[in-house]
Length: 99
Image (cartoon, rainbow, N blue to C red; front, side, top):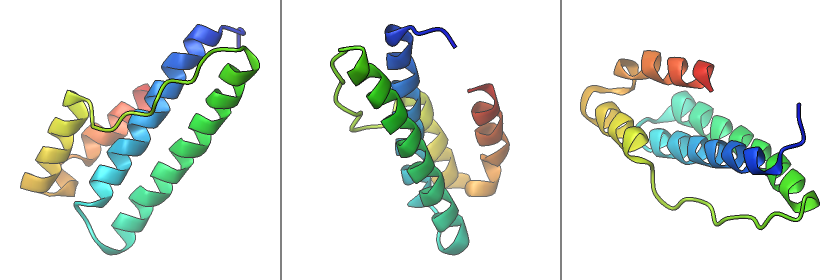
């Protein structure tokens, strides 16, 4: 991988957004599914820490983490709340695979 600190900002943003999404989805379910989403959020936070380390090494200021979902993720969570988590799993898997 090329050492491109500005690209690392993009990666950091994606990881943080994913963590926020998984936490929001965890709030739509209970039991094992909730725990699975929370575990995924924790994994994304570990990935974020990696990019923060790389950015810090490069002397790039670390932006504040997002406090709300981006519009596309908010729509996905709204669909999960309205139609159930099973209705969005294919979309979620495709999004994760593309990332």
